[in-house]
Length: 589
Ligand code: ADP
Ligand code: MG
Image (cartoon, rainbow, N blue to C red; front, side, top):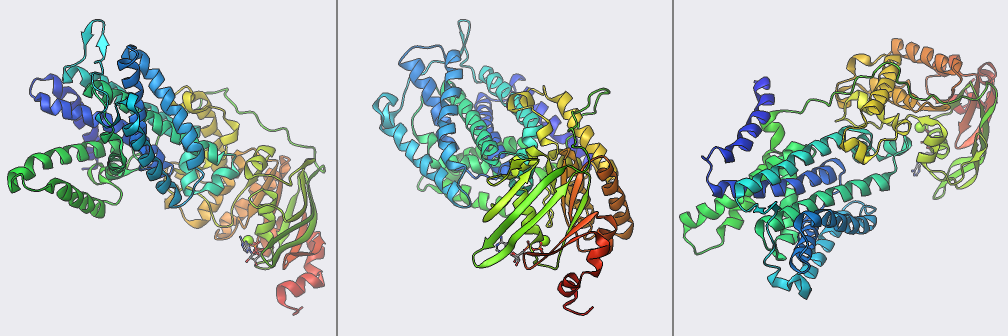
């Protein structure tokens, strides 16, 4: 059954792609298939933007409009050949998306979808009110695409153009999603904190996705204009924008093929209701909109993850490329043992009236394990977040290898060689374990959008995955590398985070309660790993509640209580320190 389900999509796709040329399919349906293909392009962009990137847009139709009007104006008013207007249409959409996106993607929560509605409406009125765009009547007389002197007017011929574009868009988008930048985007939605801690530029990645989705919409607009041979503002309003969003959601937001399924579902449903309902109820009412809405609500209620998983089951995880021999990523040159790495000077953090970290001072030298201990609420995690740039300092200073970190961001901390884990695990549950770990190696790679789209990033990807696999082996999780991370137990996820942090090639590894939830055997293995890491020249700043664990490992301990450092020294002394005993045991010693 599952085999059948996984074979079904390629077979169905092959049948549908051949059908127009068999002569059995009426032109009416071929035309419908063309509109499905054009809408699919917009929906594929939305899968990336909304399903993967988590940015809900009701305004994609406006970008379809920019693509369509650009070629409309250039061909009708200036007589430019349609093939030449394609790059222009894409550039115009790109420029407008970059400008709109720069403002929009920074919005959070409900503000982002609301903003997309706002500019969707604004652009709709813009199209309808500019006289050289034909105002509300639109631009008629757009030429057909030509090959030589032959015009591509027959829907069967246009079918080839549209579906070549769709297939290319699917391949490019899948490649993009499976590459380094795609992983970063997939991580952003579920865990912005983790993505940033491994150097992902949040605003930049979101803007990239926004522009990419808009350009697919622009391409759809260009194809639409030359198929329809006229443009008017109607199809570029917010109603159409909502429909594109429904396509992406209905097919299964987050899946590229789902976009095509959703586009087909909605296009055919709308079309068939227009035929069926007048026949049932006569031509008196506008029933199709109501029936259409009702069917959609029903489907969305029963299939909250979209239709794709119901019909075809969950997708297999992408296969990481296998590394070739001799390809090794550069390793960081680690400082000599005993060099001063991290200096925390009078670090202070207040939350309103609460002093979470109270003028704390300590240092970390290279090749050392430093334990940061203290009762719950002592300020350990906050101190971590100050060092890694996740929180800004209220006052004081932190320096790493001589670089002052007063205004540091998590991305900069990552670039300097600070690799961290989180007390509350931050992983991407629907991404495989090895991809989660490979996110840690994000800064070791350089491939951008274009290299990923064209699959020119294979050698680099192979190296990143080899690094990820090596670190997974070190923490003993190589067996589960291909499983979705969400299926692992909490203790295992902590080890996944350790492996991810090690992928950064850190100079300083910051671990926030890594042993919590681990079994005795796993704790021993982790302790062994951390000693190994130290012997390689990496320093570790370790927050841990398990006193035996931290006392046996640490070279030096820093003890916090209510945000203030109350003691510092070697474990043997800290064990006997009256202030520490008082803090931990409430005076019973
Ligand atoms: P620890 O990790 O040592 O258990 P934390 O650093 O998490 O302690 O917290 C120190 C104190 O700061 C606690 O009283 C906690 O409630 C408070 N705190 C931590 N983060 C925040 C925040 N984002 N907003 C307000 N208070 C916070
Ligand atoms: Mg904590």
